[in-house]
Image 1 (tube, rainbow, N blue to C red):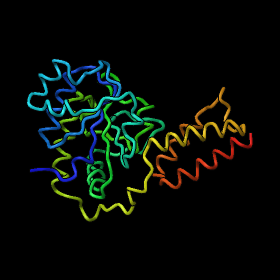
Image 2: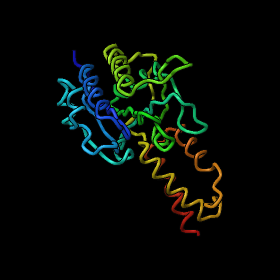
Image 3: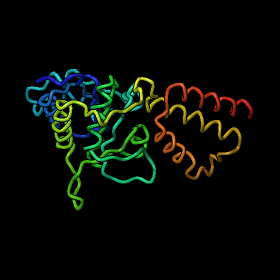
Image 4: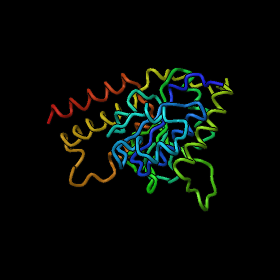
Length: 248
C-alpha cells in the first residue's frame, strides 16, 4: 500500500560516518514506502556509493542512487514548513520539544496540508549539535529506556519510518487540525538568515557586544522558533534590522 504524499517527507542524515548506516537507512526507508534521502556533509564523500552502503541497502540501491549529498543543512531544509530534529538530549535553548507520538501527528497534519517536512538525524557519535537544532522547528525524542536511551542511527530511522507509516496510513485525526496555513510559514533557513541580519543590526546600534554576547542570540533564536514566523513577518523583521544597520 502506497503512502499518499510521501514525497513531501525528507529524511536528512547529518555528518554520517559509516556507509553501512546509510545503506541500512535506505533499506528501511524503501521498506516503509519512503524515498527522499538527503546526506549533509557525510564524513566520506560519495558515502552512498561505498561498497558497505550498497551491500546493506540490499534491494534499495535506487534510494541510494537518488539520494542528494550536500554540504549545507540550511539549503537541505529550505522550503520545509516543519523540520524535526531527532535528539534525546535536553538543551537550555533550542526549538520546542515534543515526543515522537505527538510529532507523528503534526507531521501527518503538515503533509496533509501539502507542507514539506524534514526529519533530521545527527552524527552517530554525538547526535545533533546545537547548530543543527537551531535550524529545526522542533526537537523530538523517541520514548526509550531513560537509563539507556541511545539508539543506533539506522535503528532510529527504522523505528521512525515504521511508526510514521502507520500514522500516515491512518490519516489525520480531525481533532488535531492545525489552523496555520503551512504554505505561509517561513522555513528555518529563512529564520536563520533573518537572525544573522538581526545580529548585525543589534551590533550596529550597540545593543549586542560581539566581544561579550552572553546569551542574547540563543534567546532570540528560541523566541522566534517558538513563534512559527510567517514569510511576511520575516520580511518585516529584516526591514527593522536593515534600519538598525543604516542608523549606525
